[in-house]
Image 1: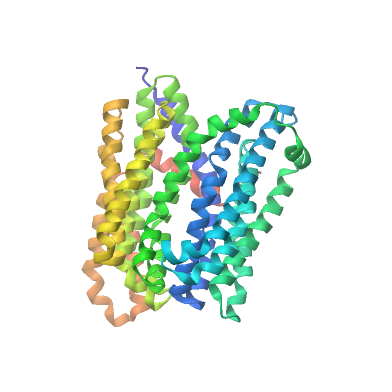
Image 2: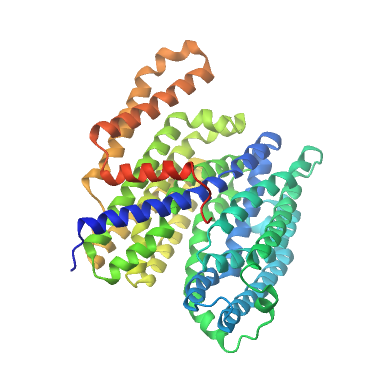
Length: 508
């Protein structure tokens, strides 16, 4: 085993911090979709929001089939050819685009044809027949959009993804959804708006793509034997992604079978708010993968462990604060979207804890991947799918929304324990350290501070009380972290993120 020096640790933490700052820009841009969610929930209510979310879940799972790992294929093969004008690049692009287009057309026809069966028998929501047929038209543009953006990412251009997914998609989705103010069939309008938005985003992405590639050559170049190469590489990745996305959306599908559209909408919003915690991991993943791959390739296991423990600690600093805030203020936060949504407070808290566990231990999948053991990750997502299916079928009929959240917590805790065991036995890697308890301690103390003063603030009014309590929680959390001592790497991360927030968007 090769050890890692202090300069290497400093370089890694700086590299990951700078990469995280770049990714943070895209994450914050995509968070603008909350305006769309707020508009739909306030205007149309939880019932329409639930049906729309269910239709989008069908799209997201289906497009994982139509993309079928070819987005990662582009990230793998395009950088291997140094010249973007090389014919080999266009053979790969042509192969990927043609396969994606054929799969998307097949998915469109299949969903359109079987929409009555999917809506009536599978989901028990007959009102989804027409919306499913309308949103199925998004499969082709959405598939091509993902592949085009992956091709530009392969050139290490990340700004295009931030522009298209962080700005174009949420802005046009909100604009195209405005007709629900005047027309009765809000669910159909929203699904049509979703389809129209993907078409606009595809046009924008294609324009950006053309600044680096010839779109005509990318569509017309003969494949000349690249088909089998692409399929062999993409198939296991596509299978993994499809099962993983199905697991993520499974609770919505099972819940739809047992509960009303109104309850489904309440749970869908809770899931959306809890899923923010997963975004914290996405801040670090793209830059952490190459750093860990390099360390693993050099057999620097101390360096791998150092990067793992560091990023898990950073994620806990963000995640514990978010979970604590949602635990204390779940009802007022949900009430912003409508009074009915406050009924999902308990489910929201349970989901936040579940996603924090999943995000914190999900990095172990990355360590397994860079060590050359992707089949173990495929086994893990299959275990999650089976566990979620079993727990949802047992808990949802009896406990409804809380049962679905409990199923998520149970399955994520199970896979977290399995991942930890695999890491210790196979990789000889323990990703946890004592200094990771600091944010947990800060969250507990901040929560107790809020509970201690909550009773004395009732005379201030509801809105002012919640605002003061949130401020007390944030200040207490930061103060405790300062007292127990931030690591030098933590201060470096904060400095880089603050400088990034005052600088130009990444990619310039």
